[in-house]
Amino acid sequence: MTRWGMVIDAERCVGCQACTVACKTENQSPHDAWYAPVIEWEAGVYPDATLNYLPTLCNHCEDAPCVTACPSGAIKRRDDGIVIADEDVCIGSRACMAACPYGAINFLENSGTASMPGSSVASQPSVPERYARQQHVPGAISKCTYCAHRIDYGIENGLEVGVHPLATPACVVTCPAECRIFGDLDNPDSNVSRYLEAKGPGEVLRPDAKTSPNTKYVGLP
Amino acid sequence: MTSPSLASDHTGAPLPRNVFMDQFSLEPRTQRVWDLNHAVWFTLMGLGGGVFLVGRFLNLTEDLGHWIGIPTIDMISFAAIAVGGMILVADLGRPLQFWRAFANVRTSWISWGAWSDLIFLTVAGLLVLPALRFGGSRPFSGLGWDPDGSNGAGLTLEIIAGIAAMVVMTYAGAVLARPRSIPYWSSLAIPVQFLLSSAAMSVAVVLVIEVIADEPISGGQMVLLAVLAAGLLVALVGHLLTRTDTPGKKESLDGLLRGRYRHVFVGLVLGAGTALPALLGFVGAAVGDLRDALSVICFGLLISGGFLLRLITLRVGIFPPVYIPSNQR
Image 1 (spheres, rainbow over the protein chains, first blue to last red):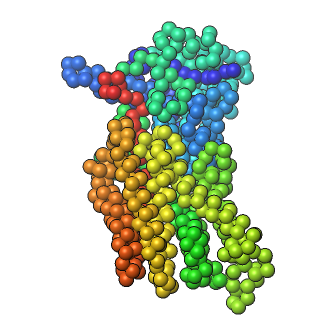
Image 2 (tube, rainbow over the protein chains, first blue to last red):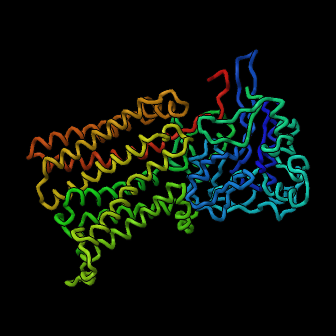
Image 3 (cartoon, rainbow over the protein chains, first blue to last red):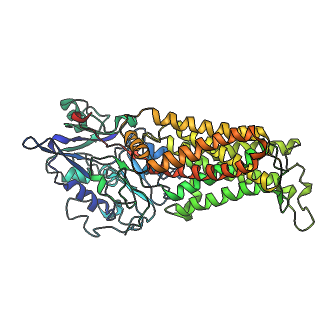
């Protein structure tokens, strides 16, 4: 059984926010919606001060509280582990936003239009437009889908997911430091499984929330 | 353009609802998806279900006046739930899609709530239908059940409506308590607080209707009011004293007891809205002559305290940081 997941090596992140912007252009998210922000914070005191980065996105949890809380059934977990939101079915109750421990869900208060229309092919190789959402629904929520449209396109066209750029999430493809790795967590030979084998089991964010995320972290400070 | 909201962060700074910059920060985040409208909705739902149950429990439904043939108590209950439901629908991002809220009964407490509201209004409405008066006639009097639940069919409807009313009173708290995302909310204490607050408010409403209808208030009714308020006080204090160092809840408690909401929470919710009505209830139980006056005072205190309890509970909903660096744990 396939279980798509991402490993993020925080030690490698340089804080360029290229993933944040690549996600925005790929998904045409409205100006006030961010699916993949990179958190940054200072630690220590000069001369031992450091700037730390934490790339984030939807954690695509096994036990996703957003799926449980959603009254309309707009948020679903696919068989391959990807948690997707159907904006057309969403009623805008925002119960998912209150339930998500990661702040990964955006409410499209007024704007349903893309922030950078027509720019989706500018920053990274992109799949044909029919796979990507170009218009969002005002009053609904939206979130990261692990670029499910690119994964589906890759599978349909025989491309190796997580390896071929057109079959890999935009944030992964665009990262100059290669700190994001995407693949099948249930396949011991996949790039994510091999990376976790080399670097340790990985940590998850907010372990107290007991959501069993499919986004794992290594190299956290 | 985002619309302004009354929400603020745990330091008291006002925040628009959809500001995004805190997604880039490793600080605790104050929730701002639910605020004033939800507090009103939670209060009205608690009252709507509670007033119906209390009226039936105290067997006062038929004694406290009627409006077009329907007991005043039931009319207040229906009106509260109908208005609360409309406020909720209006607050949805896509109000015209509200019917989809009934879809996820498998796991969503909001879906459970939507169904319980519908079932309550339908079944309780059916229950009182034979009593409905148009002019001098009762067009539905031949329906075959008694509106006071004194025959088999009437009792069955009353029990179903009562169970639905109980869920109506409870589900708002359960919506907050079920996910683990916000530690202050993630506790059985929240639905218990909401349930006890709803019950106490509802008893106060019924007592005021008794005063208006010039019916005598018994000592037992005052004791019931006092015990519910005292139980709420215990539930509130117990929640304040547990898991105080948990990230997220610690900031919520700071806001409630030392920060922006300390005066409102300690003074108006804990003191005037809960402890004082409990005390007055016991006084009223002992001194018969004061019951009418104390009932009216308790009504004002419990309703305002109950509303503020819900509003402040929403406003101190704080997400802890998504990650706490190893040197800060």
